[in-house]
Length: 140
Image 1 (cartoon, rainbow, N blue to C red):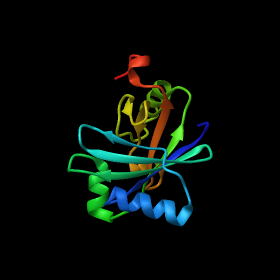
Image 2: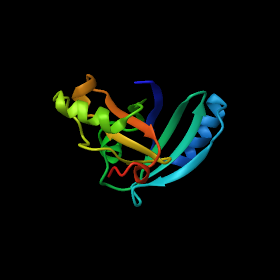
Image 3: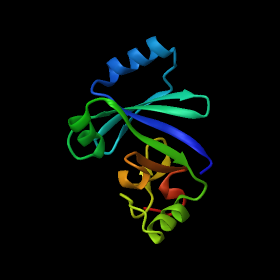
Image 4: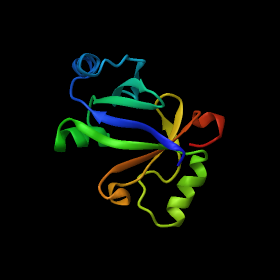
């Protein structure tokens, strides 16, 4: 791990959440991105080297949707920056660490991601992330 990359926060209303975070924390919105063919809308707030991601699930079919239905709004995951996501994903599998993704996949913001299962980090959903989209490395 090289650093904490971002904190994923599930919200039910993205526009209202953006206004709240701007008002309460004084943070500036960087961008909003659609992800997963209509699954999610994500707002990005840079805080130094760490991003806050406000994630609104739009329909069933994602762990974010499941989280919102089960727990309501709140922190869903922590994402850790890695230099070589393919190597880290392989290491996790080799060491029998519970993973949700068996190979890196495309993430928001032209990244590659790999999720761990909650039991890997004592109930916290973990994500590994590397800058650069999957087409740059040939990963799926």
